[in-house]
Image (tube, rainbow, N blue to C red; front, side, top):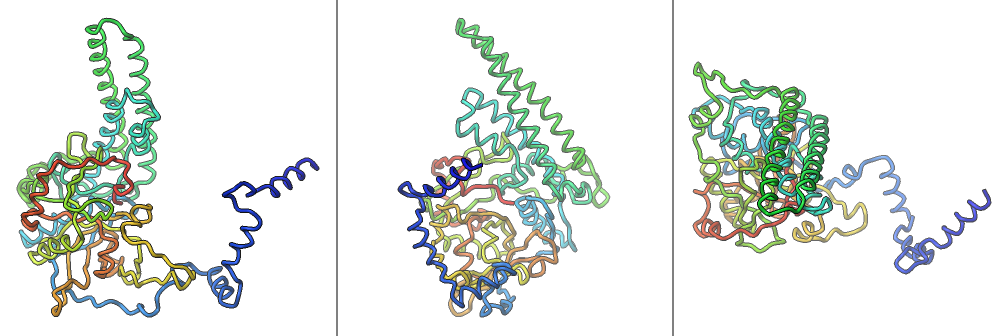
Length: 469
């Protein structure tokens, strides 16, 4: 026991003694940051019993923002993704349902998110397993292999997934394949799917390693024949593995509907999509992004960032935020909603449903400054796109002709925020908006010309491109 205390005393004495560590002298110096005076004690007492968010509310900004908008897309109904990361899917489908409601003058309608979510999860499982096969010759420590096993599947995503899935599998009304508990609460299902996929991925790599060892280094013709046979075996394994994933999904979500009745007529999901939407989703939309870390006027592609293996990678044009606003305003004025994504958790007043950088005064509460700009926040992982919503309104000042505020239709239910929507000031839009998907007819000619560039390929693990939830 004496030896233990002696060792502890030695560790305490020498802790921080190396250059770069916190020494006793340094600790004495930095502890002066907290003076313990009356002001510090008052804040300390308040923080002991209340949340930082509550205490940092800016009382000077407490009044509800003006809810008038000069231009607004006509929409009906608010959706609810509940405890799932499917904002990207709800947003994409909300854009399309607004079109269908307007085109057919419907009192309201909703597409089945559960139907497309089933195929999204199945396709992502295949994307992972095929990715494991594609990287079978790389060491397990390789960055791409590590990324695959770190991200075998998620319920997040982005607009390219919406378009690829709809074109491949069609659409159905919500009544044809309603939500289940598991589709609304995806955490447990996702945990089991990822666990199974990681096991399957290891089995594929082991089967390849064992098979490759048996093939050896004989004549080239024999090696090529052996590798071809081995590849066929891996594909057969993958199909068997996906069969188990399909069963898990069917148990949790229900098996996808193949035919259904709508307004007295029988449809398949594809025929329903073709009749009521009939739009070339993969070629009629352009993803625009405001990423101040990269050169504007350039096209970028995110490697392995897709939902469907035989689909498209995420591709976007990077532009200054003012140019993005021009396209957004043109679309809204033409009564066309847009897929929009941002860093929704920053300066959000959930009760009012307002995103405003003046909502919270963290600096006065903590006695420090937070001075990073948008580029620096992205570079240091302090900010990034986290949530997709449907951009439906803008309020333009008559005197200046400039936008004052914007509104998005959210997918957190009708009682969330402002009547199920969120209102954002133009200043907040500048700082925390990242992506917009807009129809080509609202995109200026010079921006469309940019799409003719050969895209710069960015790695899947770039921190800017996590799936939206």
